[in-house]
Length: 158
Image 1: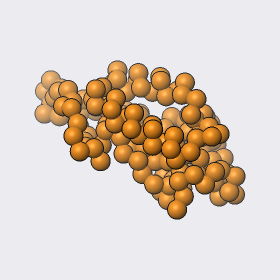
Image 2: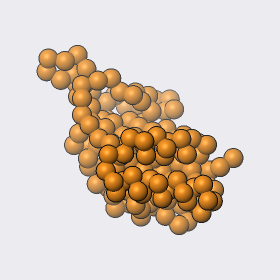
Image 3: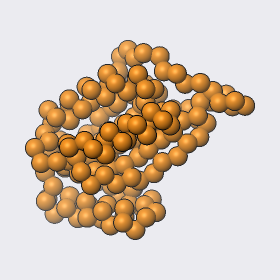
């Protein structure tokens, strides 16, 4: 977790005591050559940049798969997602969920936190259980099949 972070502009919405937060959840496949050092650079960059946009979140990486939850002001989260869509370090970006509501942050102190690879299968199974679009569900099934068969890299595994 980050020790110090700049103040975020979480403003309560009119008529609500809580700020209006937008969140996006997605998963993707790591590009060839993405290793633990590359993931650490992603985390370091996120910890520097995300507070400036009021964005907090969680990144799970393992077995060649990224899973990320982002939350913050709608425009800032959407701008970050637009950048992520063109990031060459991953591909096959599958949006899993998004929404906006007045609520407390789920990750108030995590400008970006990395979760270990041992959780990636559980994350993918949960995402598949909640997938609403057939195309997204098929990509998730493919990722699970590749994970189970050992076709994906073992980066991040203990």
